[in-house]
Length: 292
Image (cartoon, rainbow, N blue to C red; front, side, top):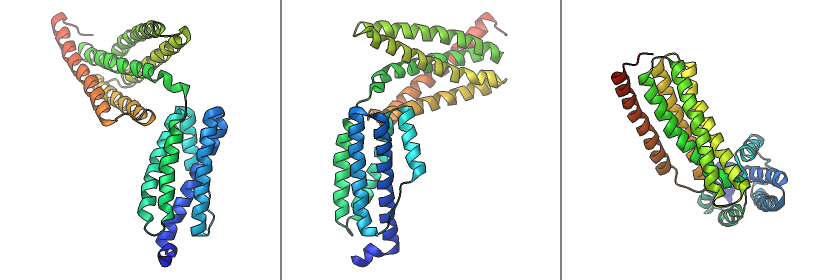
């Protein structure tokens, strides 16, 4: 067993573990300082656990291993830009893989199994304690995204076959989308106001409208850039799928929701409406003889 511990490949594996622990300690320490308050205390406790694991591993490697600064900065800014809960849980996915690697390596060093259990037990409990106000409005953001994807993608698909000019398609789609964003914001405001305070209702209304407008801009943009309307249509549909992919991945990480089933459901609904609207646009163009 002593030879196994000091062999080149196993020694390198231990150094990699040690560097990962140092990186985790650096990430959580930086987040703790920026978060402050109760969340800061939770993150500082995780950082201390990571640092302790690193010291234990140093006892086996006999070497110092500093953090991976690039990785630490990446996760730190992901958490700052996209939310503390999302950033920490994304990092937790990596920690989960590390825990499995610890368990596999524990046949040589039993103490690694204790580190793996400690990672799994303490970090999951601590991360579950994190409180973040940003997640309150996730439902409103998803509402705005879903409605915009279904309504705008469907509208643009129908306009693509009805009209020849991509500029006209973009203009009509934008007008429809702006009206839809205002309607959604107003509806969300009234819905939340009936449940709680005006401040919560205003926040929900703002995030719903913002998500709707951002999606509108991304979907209309191909019709401004590409003069060929069917090229613009394909780019628009691919953009819609990427938006669905991105926000379902975010939800799956931040709120522990299933990814593939939600992604498939939203994608089928949005693309299905788009193809049906494409057929409706062809029918309207034929009936009214539109050629603009």
